[in-house]
Image 1 (cartoon, helix red, strand yellow):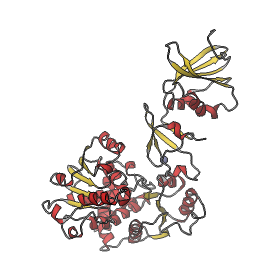
Image 2 (cartoon, rainbow over the protein chains, first blue to last red):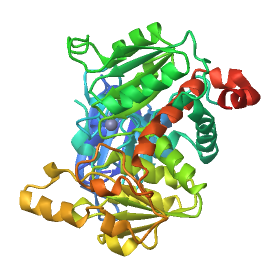
Image 3 (cartoon, rainbow over the protein chains, first blue to last red):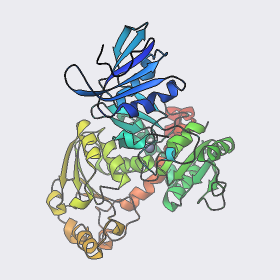
Image 4 (cartoon, chains in turn red, green):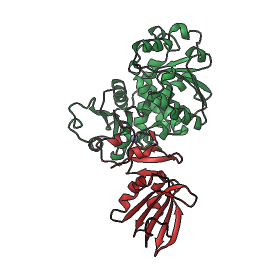
Length: 151
Length: 319
Ligand SMILES: [Zn+2]
């Protein structure tokens, strides 16, 4: 444990195997779930296999699979570790959701969901790697999601 | 099957449903022509919400509703409406739904018909949303092909023109994947169909060929669907002239192919020469008329009045 750069957490959730540089995007995705929690983010940390990866730790909150699945949009191979009293009590991989709602806006500037209408943008996930979403409104497909994160 | 249903995108309908709509449209032809009188929609109101002008679409919906004995209210452009005052589409649609039994929406933004359907308690028919969908156009195109060829399977259909931006082209070709048709996409390379569209067609098991040469495909095709090549797509007017000339359909080009069906969603500019109009291959004016029976069928189906008439009564209406 001596090479840990960040203190291990007592209780909470560790999101591991985030592609290097994507942790901040993952944080923006889960932020609404953890508005008050203390979160630490490790960027470009070296894994046991000598590969770079990012890690995100949320203290005091166990995130359920339905909650964190949307993390898969940016970190398809992420694993979720639920920590209780310093030990891992549950571990699972994220899986790509079928629908995405709310935190991404449509890439089509002429889409009705980008106007002043009382709707949340909604998408069907049509492919996983690379991730492609199809807007439920304009039916256009989009990738490169990081450019279209809602504030 | 259709009562209360929205008509937003052609991909919401499977082959069986498309065929039922076309069958019912056929029965509507004598009524659409005024040869028969029927008023199954008497007492019903159609709201036409046109947030951008489209005379052809609006008039054919109005004609369709009137032919069925119904009434129409609405607006032909947003000027002076509550939209101009900043009202949301969601609110406008809720209001219109309260005043009518069925809504036709034309709107410059993609996806607006889907949004409208979400807020309307009454069926919404998409009369064109921006560069998005225009399903009633596609249905009348299919109707015209079937009427002329007697079938939709086993055909070779060439689609010519601006395949990059043309929404007509995308939804017609998607609709044709429900049938055993081969699609020939004919365009200058600058205006080729988006990869996304071509991939969808192929994923649906349809044979697709993409060519730049129009003359070369004419001996293989049953239907030539011509669309406009817009001047705005070309920064250089000389280049536009050259391309437009290459794809001009005239009598000399098509006279060797007496069985060809030539279609066009209209309005045309000069992609089809006027000397073609009087030839038997020219079907585009008939195609424009077909907008009425097809829209009549949709209005009767989604308001539940077609089903109320029943199959036999439906025959009665038509004969
Ligand atoms: Zn959209």
